[in-house]
Length: 475
Image 1 (cartoon, rainbow, N blue to C red):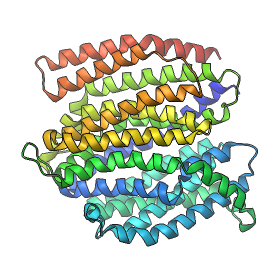
Image 2: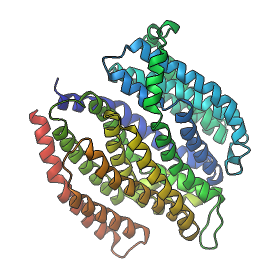
Image 3: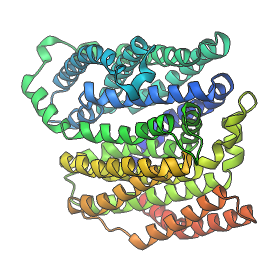
């Protein structure tokens, strides 16, 4: 099977598992907004983000090195799995000792009362990730997708039981995720016969060292991306302003505003899981640069078209996914969603360019470019949030991903020099930002302008998308 067909097939298979599961998780937002107050939603969002912050530190970027080494034929998969498992379990022990200390840090006081659950939450997620990434490395993409569907169904059921029926709030949410992740890990371990790959005799000290050297620059990269997300919520929750409403309830509203653009990140996640495998396996191919060019062109077009489409229907979609019947504060969520939708475009493109660093093993570049984005985000949060409130956080997020994109598009193409149309990207961005402003400021004839700009995005990107699709189908 050639590289184009394999990428297309993997994208479809991942799509079956990821699309349905992600959409179902997004619809859980309605369940949460009906049963959890804005203040508690702010705590929930920060707990989720701190878990994303701690996991790569204590698993030593498991999701990066396991797929990278697992896909390379020169490494024995028994050694890859056992060594990865040993690193992960060691990290979980260290994490258990460290997490209770974090609640004594003033801006992390939201951890207090959830320490034990947070430890189990991260452990369950890490065990699932270990099994998930290894079956991807074994090219068992159908099982990966099936697990995604089953895990989401169990998550949905547990959420209904713990939140709607038992009314356990934030703790109920965490318990639902824990039960779903543990069930998924057990399912994958049994069905994929992972016990055959787990034995102390397969542990390789030299491989562990090689994995750690590869992952070391990626740990701060992942952590800094998480800081970008966590800092928004902490600044909103902790800062005071005479110009804007801030606090835990505002952080909860911001958390839901972030969930709507996840409809775009569904597309990104499906593609990226397939693309990351292709980027690694095709790194040494003769026509690698042309392969990147075609795939990037189509990917960028899809992201801008999908984002324009979401902005076109942003208010009814937000009303569908986030109910304000019990908590009227949620009725303003859609105002903060447009800039976050634009942010997702560049976050997704940053991921694509980051795959170049992983495939070519230039992971240090991934670190310093992410550091630049994180620095921009922290500085912009400090200045913008007191003045613009939640909207300031959304603008800071957009600027950080946007600046990182331009740094990476210049730097990453040094290693894989594929052609890139900068003018088209700038025009696309200008049109999307114009749509955001129209929605945020409720401009006159709003829908007419939004429809017009959506048509412009389709004209700019539609032809390139069709041409790329035809070329891929010919293959």
